[in-house]
Image (cartoon, rainbow, N blue to C red; front, side, top):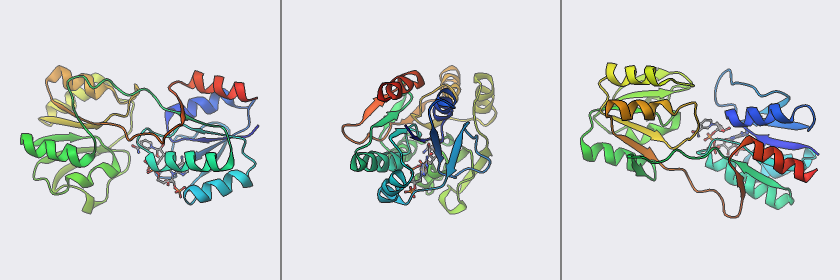
Length: 241
Ligand code: NAP
């Protein structure tokens, strides 16, 4: 058995650690961030060249199962993996952490809708945590944004008034609360990433009374098998052996 583990998340690293060295696993990273946290075991970095390139890669590397543990918003690689695995007749599993409850958040379907909510409510100082590619929808806004991301968005994809905060989680509630107060934030925009690493901002927003605009997850490809925990992914792989 040889498993391709599509990663770039804490869950993928945890799964690689659980499987290594008993199950041969190749972890795959997109190569977007400098100095990524690396999983244990074999790692490859970089795109495959779409679903076809991935299918070819699966064949060429004698892969017998695919686990997609990419971020819930990494929709392109997830669609490609589902297509390539189905085409190659390989067992395929999506490991996705559970979403956060919506709570009192204004739930929207896209970054563009989130930007519309910001404009409609007249929010002036927005904590924007939708990542490097999540700023483009806000670029024509005249509000001020605190943009937190792992790597800086391109200048032309950012709103005119902003400050960039480069960092990666995990975050703590106290720190998030201080940030909201220090910058006089009046709205938080977040993706529904789920997980504990970045949940503190929601607790802090609730404490400080900052409204939350939450972008819901893209739909998964039809018919895929999905589990929400590393344990369940290990069980699934064990059942294949
Ligand atoms: P995406 O939009 O779904 O994928 C864009 C392209 O990047 C894919 O078509 C593929 O290129 C390549 N790619 C993505 N993930 C890959 C992987 N694990 N291994 C090899 N190639 C990969 O992905 P994204 O949203 O940019 O995310 C990129 C990576 O960052 C993922 O590994 C994801 O888990 C991680 N990440 C994403 C987010 C987020 O909010 N989106 C947050 C944290 C971590 P080819 O078509 O050439 O194969």
